Image (cartoon, rainbow, N blue to C red; front, top):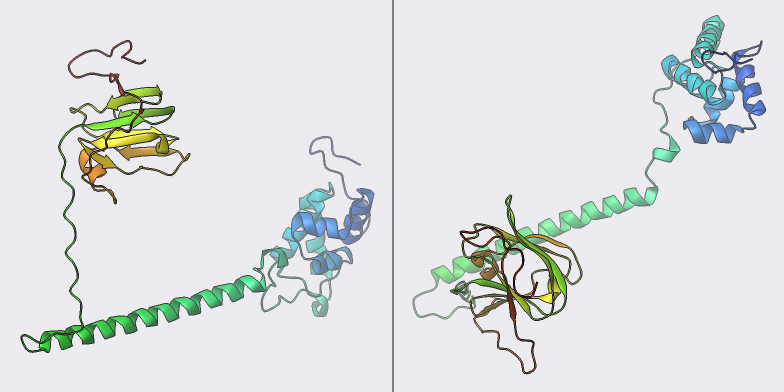
Length: 293
């Protein structure tokens, strides 16, 4: 019989475990189905249907299991929990729930053994690597001390590290040249857009010298050739991968690895660059379109 207010069926007459089992069978569900849906261990479901007490967890957990089971088979969960509590209270003292020292974890949530083994191996590898690194540092300290104690004019086996190369210095504007059709957007960080459109192969855009912190967004960084004055800058991103917020400040570009002072010469038959006007030129309103637009 279904309650017109709650939409849940009243339990039939009988013990609550029997009622839950009967409602489950009427719903076409197996105990495995109930266990999979509620994550209640199967042994606890069997004990509840048998109106037993042995092996159940503490009473609050057991009543929570009863509520979840009842809800799934359309029996009022609070009524079912109250009925099971009364059943537990009426049970002889020798048959009442004795909480287990610990509640076994749900097998579905226990990490597999291979994962625990992998974590152990990883911890051992990290410890071994740390010990090796510490040992290497001790050896370096010994070699350095030996070298410093050697008399003047004595050649030691310690190699002098080469000085770091000086950063490339270049003058001139930042220029982007399309080597293939490419869409790009150039904008001030947290500011207005300076340029946004698709460039054809051979078209060139020069970043305004008055730009404070220009940034680049494109999905084809390999289709752009970037120079600072006459200094070539390596490709700023991976091919066909979205590049967002790439700085176009000269200092940031010149600080990238692989920057050389070689000027990019135009190869025979190369398209003649066609300069595109910025969206917001210095000291004026945005133009309706630039050359090559």
